[in-house]
Length: 279
Image (cartoon, rainbow, N blue to C red; front, side):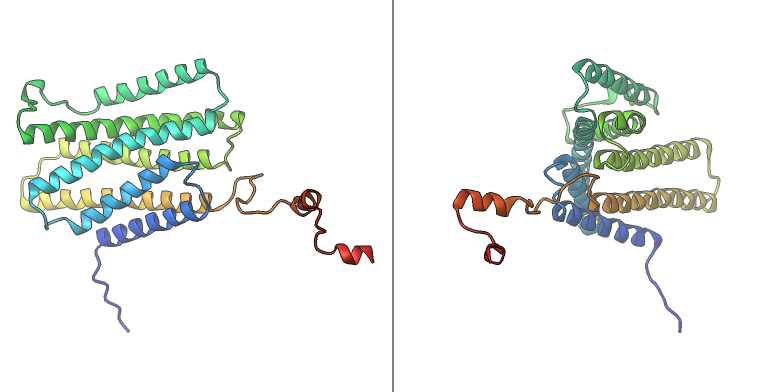
């Protein structure tokens, strides 16, 4: 018996990624993690919407409208990504003093700003214009790219800090904030590695024929597919870690063991089994 699968690697990765997002959202809702990590949940929802939009809207909308939609979503993703870092940092380093917070924020932003400043080429400011729609879209796209790069850089740096010092503030390896941060850092490292590799290939490779050009494009697809596989592994990590309760955590719907006795004291009504004990 022969099985014929008419799915490309990109389609398989897209399906697994979207399914993993849905499962993660179910875990966040079912295990009541949304209240503790609202911005992280919002980031997962937005990423799932971007995946769904890429499948449903591509080749079905005018190119300009499609560009506007995805550029706006990319800007929102960068902003929410930064808020996720603030949320996780507050959960890990909440007991830290204000001086530590200020010093740490300055150092992390300095690292991220340095990476953004020296990463790739900036467009000439004279070519940037806000008077036209295309000009505004270019500015928004530039913001999405640079803000995303800033978030990835700060994520890697913050991940190292959380792993090294998180236990001192009560956020060890089995805590949800550190587990989320490990996943974020892994995804950011993979993203930065992919961008670095592709930039070097695109800069140093000059195809002289259609066959060479297609070979470069095939290599690009393999690199981005590998990044997609890494992100799927990160999603699975989050699903497993967020499903398991932290050490010492109580079930949200659990009934305290002292509740029947307290109820009896307050109401004067004898609890279950009192007749048997009296007899």
